Amino acid sequence: MRGDSKKGSLVCVGTGIQLAGQITIIAKSYIEEADIVFGVLPDPVAESWISDLNPNFVSLQSLYSESRSRKETYKDMVSALVSEVEQGKKVVGAFYGHPGVFAWAPHEAIRRLRAMGYEATMEPGISAEDCLFADLGIDPGASGCQGFETTQFLFYKHTLDLYSYVILWQIGLAGEWTLQSFATSKSNLEKTVSYLSRWYPLSHEVIIYEAPFLPTQQARIERFPLSELPDKKLQMSSTMVVPPLKKLELDEEGLKLFGLTVDDYKSTT
Ligand SMILES: C[S@@+](CC[C@H](N)C(=O)[O-])C[C@H]1O[C@@H](n2cnc3c(N)ncnc32)[C@H](O)[C@@H]1O
Image 1 (cartoon, rainbow, N blue to C red):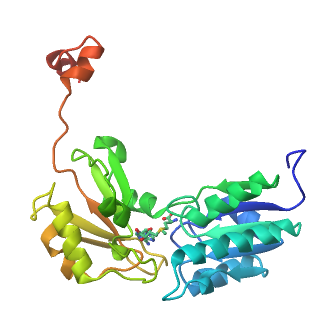
Image 2: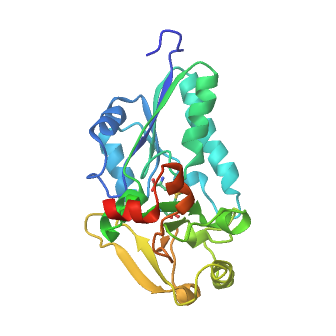
Image 3: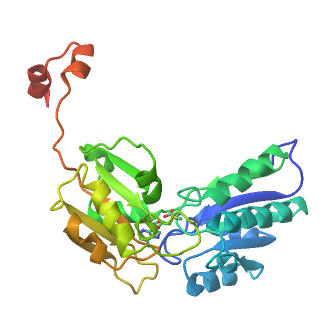
């Protein structure tokens, strides 16, 4: 503990996607040694597994409800974590996947506690994207990889790289701007296809991926033309992958900065 830290502390850990097998040794040890463990986990089986590691487990899932803004839910999660630390406890926030990936509450709780002088840290976990790379055989280094929250991608001016993979997180909430519903609609998916068709032909293959949460489940890897997206059944746990539209092309300008021509470079690779 840092010398100037107050007594309570927070560690946000990831539990991985698949139950039990994807948690890191350090995350498990933090959970076992905590005074209290708050959890956002994918299902009751995972919750019961964490409760076995530490009986002082409190699920934060009950904070979610239809017709309540998820923003309010996330603020309540932060308050729960922060207030126990303020009471001098060793608190663990156990979040499925990686606690810092598409997860506002852990980052915010850590920011707030550090600003108040408490020790607050994050331990990485295996995210859905890590499982995706393994199950789909995608190396993000091969031609690059961009990731967006789907609704943010639809509503903001992002620059799309057609040479890279594009990963659309929360496709199952595409266009769900009220933050009060837990599903998208066929109409929202039609609009998503229309937006993506600015860059991609409707025949471009996309992939819906769902990593298994339990060892007994299989991954969903469904490939289909972009045009068919509105007919697909999506879950909160669905992620969409859009493979590159274009093959990598050398950039003469970049090469010139290094005193190279396209032919020079090609002859070396
Ligand atoms: C709020 S984010 C949480 C991500 C999580 N922190 C992680 O590290 O993977 C939820 C989104 O993550 C992705 N996701 C979560 N579970 C998944 C799974 N089992 N398979 C594929 N994607 C998943 C989906 O895009 C989903 O909409």
